[in-house]
Amino acid sequence: MSRPNILILMADQLSGVLFPDGPAAFLHAPHLRALAARSARFATCYTASPLCAPARASLMSGQLPRRTRVYDNAAEFASDIPTYAHHLRRAGYATCLSGKMHFVGPDQMHGFEERLTTDIYPADFGWTPDYRRPGERIDWWYHNMGSITGAGVAEITNQYEYDDEVAYHACRKLYDLSRGADERPWCLTVSFTHPHDPFVARRRYWDLYENAPELEPPPPIPYAAQDPHSQRILDACDWRNYAITPDQVRRARQGYFANISYVDDKIGEILGVLRDTRQQAIVVVLSDHGEMLGDRGLWFKMTFFDPSARVPLMIAPVEGMGPALATGRVDTPVSTIDLLPTLCDLVGLSMDEVMPWTDGVSLCPVAAGAPRGPVPMEYAAEGTVSPMVAIRDGRWKYTRCLADPEQLFDLDADPSERTDLAPDPAQAGTLARLRAMAEARWDLSAYDAEVRESQARRWVVYEALRNGAYFPWDYQPLMQASERYMRNHMNLDTLEESKRFPRGE
Image (cartoon, rainbow, N blue to C red; front, side, top):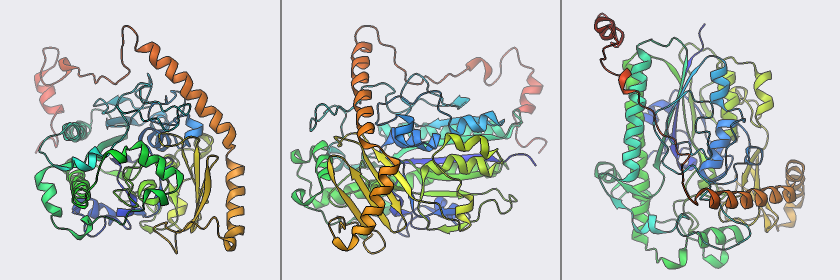
């Protein structure tokens, strides 16, 4: 039996708390809802790191940020780290990317044979944080609250222009694949930048949520009562220079929900082409990290609280694959680093050759009821002064950082994470067990030194490369115009027949 095709559909900053078992009931997302009905739905999936580039390097490689050395949005993803695209391509797959992956460095492919668009963010070292200057805002690229105050309606934006192009190229690629010129199985990754802020949406999606109860602002926590990392995140977002009103919060939430519906529309277009061209594929839906969306008074990501750290993960198997992946809801906590081994397992690759290169586990046994084990997370980017780590183990979430007090939450009893149990003497045993687990996994002093050295190196290199002639690493899509449509080196009859699907109807 030939290996199945794979279609990976990614959204950016899509919170898993809105996908308790497929899309929440209030979301207008019919295509995602239909896909969920035939998927393994991992209701408690955590990002490896709650920031774009570290999260994406981790989900592609199955490795945590300390191992990839992608600590932040300006850290190079080394070209010798195997990704799912490498493993699949090595096994004979055609691998293709349409959209965002936020690779930093001169390698802008990382195993993809073909890339259909440029990226939406820079590929250089310009967004490097600096632990030597704690508390300093890098104004030209750090988040601020302008995404909330500027929420509203627009028919075209920088991000709509990008995602419209991503969907167009993905659909065109599926049509090309249907023609059968390449007999290899394929893996197509389609990665949108929505519903990532700014919270600006097209009118037809905005109006879907007019007066929805879910727009109401979540209860904030006063700055003085926030934990130290949350205070640093608020400072990094320049909160003191903005007076956020309840109506602005409602508008920001409306724009975010509206753009989930936009992404759903684009996913519907892509799945429609897959259906119309009679192709089958394993379909994966996930995100890189979540969005706080005003919960606790926080916005964006960069924290281990669930709205930021949890992401959707749905995997719909190909019909006739057999029991390789059980469908239905799975509540066991899992990680985005599990994507790589799961894909390799599903298509029958030798796991002996895959597992040395990943920190994750295959979710095929987990979907059938097997334990997954504790889920690790790391974060070492803006808003930190030293690397942070976290473990989700059953009902418990434990957070550790050399600069901050430990945190412990019982997510069964306290899903909103409002009661830190670390100081509670009754939980001393649980705290000690999780602390020992973290100390066995991470040498935080060494990790801190590695991040500081990486940041310092990159500041030197970036300043050098921007002095004089500058050639960016940003991916430049190649369009071979002379190989498209009709040209004089082509036989017209052969061309017209080979570019038609279905043929003879």
